[in-house]
Length: 473
Ligand code: ADP
Ligand code: MG
Ligand code: ZN
Image (cartoon, rainbow, N blue to C red):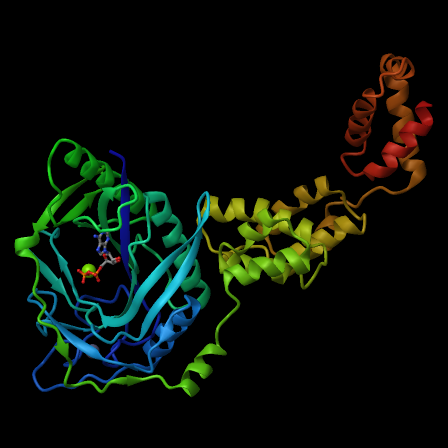
């Protein structure tokens, strides 16, 4: 029998607000343990939560960006469970009436596919239990009350690779919106995967397991593929999948059981009596909508249509908002969109990746990079010389024209200077001249190389080519 996998993802994203969701405490990461706290986020009796407006705006923005319906009225609910890093004994979340529902994200693997989003809701984060500092357990509640959105997909994903694509697109959207930094290694983006299998073509869902604890998109992909394999082997051997929660172990490349169905929580949800329903009326929705930046799919289309870029370039450049922004800054200086694209996708991106820096910290300003490209297009330097100028710009972000002058790299376009270099090369290589005469047109490349060497790469290549051919003939 052939099986197919059915996967639904629950993604938590930490929102980039300055303060927490229900109090004025800072959300700053890395402060001393238990210093970003107040009676509200410590869950003292009698305190009252006050909703952070920004959280509603960010979540609505995300809902609009993922084609969701924004519910005019949504409700906060208490999700009750006991844990040392949850001082109140409950987490404020949304249950029956979430703020966003019924959206989708399109992904592309071999085919295009639409992954439906069931809901996006707002909630608060819990604190952190720390188990590895010589004590049994330490508790840091700085993170208590940090705003999260939870994005729940329908079970429309069929493989680890599709999950990887879905997460990549999701991250692209949240970082374009600027509502989350999208860093999975640091936990500002977290993903739980629900996985089941069923006979190919069946419509009923199989029993699912939930895999947690993956700290990169690749690990999510691996964990899913591992779990699909495990379930198929189990069923083929006559076994049965039981509902349980598994933890992914990245070192051992396998998932191990954390808790079974019997130990599953009963959260006893009920509407939080301390918080009013959230009302996002049409007017507010519109206000939020107009703050929406251009999203990656649109931007890519514009790059192809208006800037005449190949699809590949447009795809790479818009994969990160910062890269697309950098690129468009370059274009405020030069109008050669393709050469600019080559530089950004090539030399710039290479350094960004090697040095693990962001585009905003790139040592060469986009304006000066644009100027460098103009020097090439104005025939003041060859593209080869530009590659020599670039390292000087990396050392100090200066106008490339000044560097070119300082280093005496300006292109030779003086006919007599080029002619004399060509004469030297011709005189020194009589054998190759004979070869050319006997019809071996290819040796022209050799001569061009020699002339460039003679002029330290500064001769204008088109002129060299043209004069060489004339002289050889
Ligand atoms: P819970 O309340 O237990 O979190 P939900 O119904 O909200 O359950 O589903 C959580 C996630 O699990 C969703 O992404 C959903 O698509 C997915 N899911 C539900 N049932 C299955 C299943 N049988 N196989 C795979 N994924 C599933
Ligand atoms: Mg769940
Ligand atoms: Zn607080």
